[in-house]
Length: 197
Image (cartoon, rainbow, N blue to C red; front, side, top):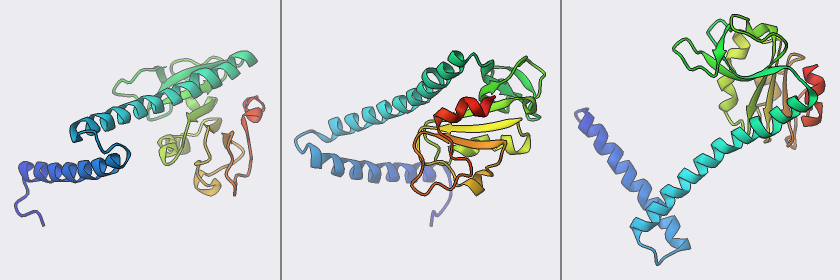
């Protein structure tokens, strides 16, 4: 298939793939605007991708900072955000991505949240505007479970109950439930505070 495998042969395959991709992109965009040059259409495409990625990052910040923090602050809930844990679930800092960082937890709920405490002593909130497969980034919560783990999402693409391993101490909160919602605990944002206390 490849002949001799080398960096240059791989780079050639990548280049061919990019040319095919760009041709498909241009064909799609020409339908909308047939008078614009290929170069300008590709610039518009790249800019739109950049805008989309910035918006996706902004949506996550919106969920964490404008919704969840606001709910917790107004209710007087004791928490820390962006809590760095190591492979044993021990807190070693806040928003630190050092070599021993295994994961950064969106929100840890409880009193006396400090370095050297273990995550199993606390409730954890994980915020995902959309889940798809990104919820599996929190698989650490199955090996070193917190006191309670709550996945919070603004979408209906959360995992099935069985795959998620939903339980009394492991739940999903969403404002857009699936049409065929198989969650054991059908929680919305109005239930969040009662789940924390």
